[in-house]
Length: 314
Image (cartoon, rainbow, N blue to C red; front, side, top):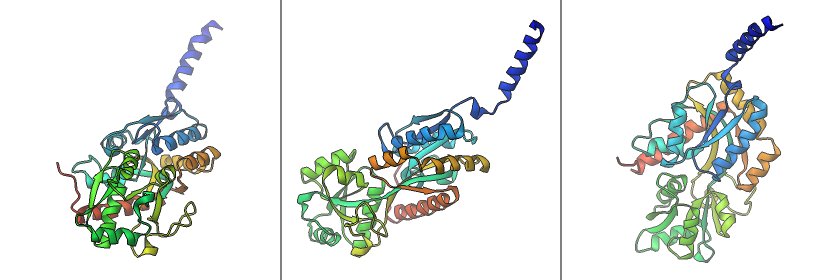
């Protein structure tokens, strides 16, 4: 029996060495924003659902900074073996490569796996502003002696680009005032520094603001009483989606496997409850459909940035 021990051990070691890498190491989902962000919350929900489906550990890694482009660059440069994925909102993929002078990558350097959620922006104002319709906003902007200030949470963000698009459509002059986050915008609202903010629906409900318009082609179930921009005469539509990406060059079979895991994950009770928490509807798109969405959004954002002369300087 003792003579069999060494050959048996060697055989077992050889078997372990031949196992696929995915069985020996954790899949890493890199998120482009910090802990407790919407991207982080949903990435962790995905990780919990992926692990049993894929049969391997799944870890979440927060890599924030530079508007999400540090995280995107990390995944773009990772081995295309399905072991490193990016979970991100629209900005780092469809906006920053056109907005930044040198983001280090383009959307084509990432392979879409699935869209998980999407929420339209809402134009919102503080309760005492007297602004109740898009026409009110346009009229006040036209009557103002100087460009009317509006808030956003950063240059090149969807709130910023959506207001640029609205100003162009309405033929009004607006002044872009950047704040660090929605909390700072709420303080600015209270102090009367700004009176307009396009943002995710979570800001609306959390702060008792007035919704003027949904930036969506149709009204949304969560806010059925809020008219769309289109209903009020302006064809301005902007949404924030979150999706999963692999490095370009990842084998189609690997993409399909991750897509299947994603399709299963979005049906879980934990995912539903988590999305209710962040006031965001689950909207699933598979790899092919999501790739078309990413391509269309990237081209649209590039056009807005170029026509507005918004490209970031060196």
